[in-house]
Image 1 (spheres, rainbow, N blue to C red):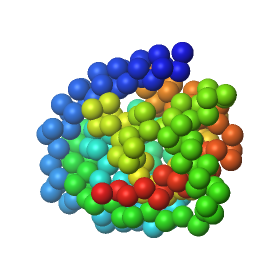
Image 2 (spheres, rainbow, N blue to C red):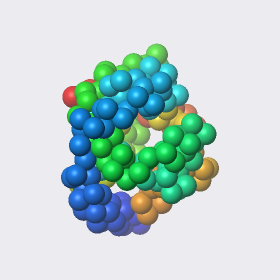
Image 3 (spheres, rainbow, N blue to C red):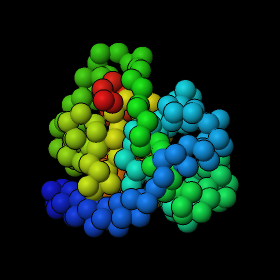
Image 4 (cartoon, one colour):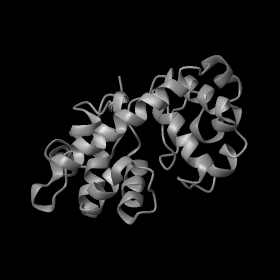
Length: 209
């Protein structure tokens, strides 16, 4: 059943990706940089946020970034700061911003987690938790956490552990629900808080390059 869910979600993701990549092909990174001033307060000029509560967006696939902006615009994703900002953007703005941030280089991640926590995180990332039906993260996000642009699965390497943990909790509770095929909601709802924290801190240690 788990394999079917992964395959179905990947197929849906690839179909979605074809449309999203077609939309973002027209993105202009130079214009994206020119209109990115409101983004700097949270994400910094190059997309490498310093506040662990706010995501690093530097180097993420432009189709994924465009989808998130579109989801905020449509109300399919909610954040007190992001929704008002995105409400002021049109689709070309979003294409251009996505194109710009996708060209930036992500900074290395940091963690203060101990070795035991990181070992558990690595175990979950590569092996999941079979007894609880938790699929391995590597299946969608890749061995180095680089994601799968063809399926619009995001890069998770070097992301702030606090941000990743928050997103897993939101998926687990159904507060975030813009994942194709409910894939992240299914996985996160089967994870313990300890597992979510451990895998979040482990992903922060992965090389973003």
